[in-house]
Length: 138
Image 1 (cartoon, rainbow, N blue to C red):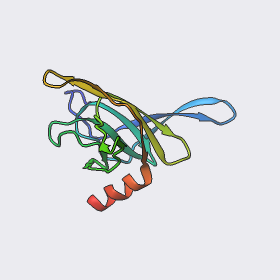
Image 2: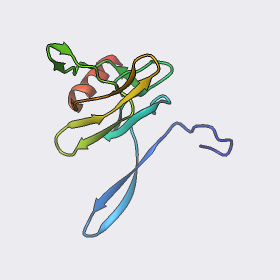
Image 3: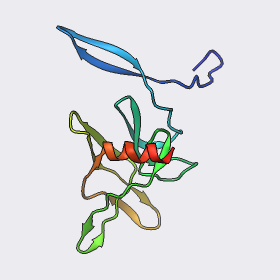
Image 4: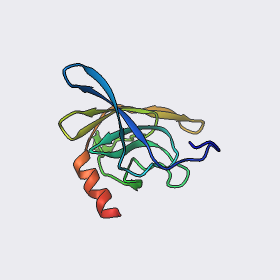
């Protein structure tokens, strides 16, 4: 933020570097900033932000956003022959270093109408496919 608390439009990420000794180094992110959302996780992959889950007022609950664009990805699981409900908010995700995959675990929520739902399974997202889909969406 600037002195008037306006968004400057850039972001920096802090990385752990081991160059004979442990150091912390700041890098400017190449990706556009995502829209404000809540209940999500954010990762940097190859210099681009990947936003997983959460709810954004403008786009609704897009499972993944990359390059600032919401993507409706397909990674449904089946349970007893029926599509398994997977709520894409209040989750945790782990970038599996060196694999190009992101593991999504947990998540769920509650509603006065249907009660509490906790996700029963994990999802494995291929970040290379997500980046390709985001490049095509630009």
